[in-house]
Image (cartoon, rainbow, N blue to C red; front, side, top):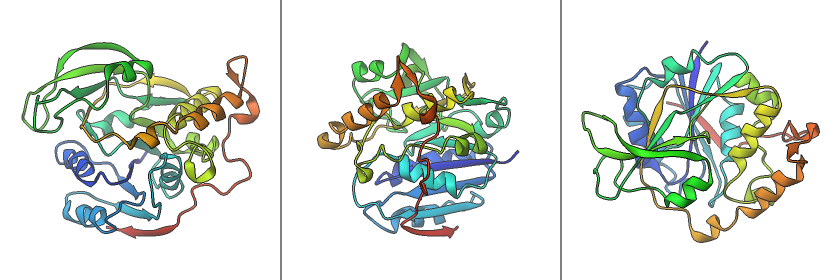
Length: 279
């Protein structure tokens, strides 16, 4: 079984660089796909990837998206042009601690995997890779944190102290390509481009449909460090409501109706407005 790392990025090139540098120290995936979802500097992501000569089979996809939006479309573009059997989806700000490729290869049949721990840095704790928490604790708790406790992690030889969170939500998603294709990938109605929200609920909808389709969750023995980044503009943060409404419209008595297990029915999803380059 081959593995593929898929990351969509919008104006977070330096965070992505630190993410990928970790693969100097842990097993590299067979393939890597980076979907540049309209980063304002049109060349910086591609040029950064060219500098990381230790990586193999890197596919750079430039998608011309001019403004903030949810990741449903770029993640589907990554899926559509993926080459691996087992896909490792993560965010540019995440840095894997353990050898994620070796762990992903053991993904059980009819399961999708997610991380055991996410380490959030506190302000001033360390210049690398995290210097402060990404968002308030009450916000994170609302979306699936069930344990907070002090924890330490060794990344690139340092031993800074971070806040340690056991996350239910898939900040990093390990999934078989065929299982994701079978449910139509991410619901592209959950994007501002298609009249939905520009933030939130797209991942929750995805894993709900996976579970309803018989692909259940399994917590895998890996962790990530979440690098600090600026929060999206407030108007983006306030745009989640349409996506919540889309989720609610799929439910009856708190359960998804069967006709909504598969997204993007009858539509060509993952449409690329841009180009693909092999690095």
